[in-house]
Length: 136
Image (cartoon, rainbow, N blue to C red; front, top):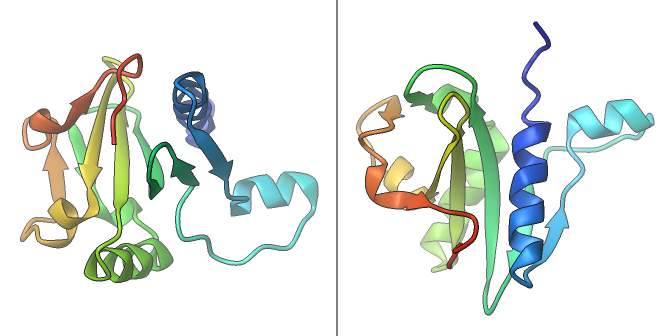
């Protein structure tokens, strides 16, 4: 079985937001840089999105199961999510549970304020999004 790099979910996310007129800036990550033999540092998120307002968007694909582990959040993403949230900005984790193709737009504050080490699909149920109707 091929390793889940998250690229499929990132592509779906980018296409969905672009289709509703958003400007989507994709940050180069280590996976992309290695393929193109580029040098890159840590990235604050997968995307910077503008659609009426601007926010950071980090796409996380969960290949199996119904739990998103915070261990998949990189140190730089934690740092930037914390700083952006404290400054009154917006940072979202878009969780893609691939087994049943469900998407959730979870504000970073939900994760930053959690006393858990993971969130289940039930924990994030109120944050479900349908990409024909993504809102900020």
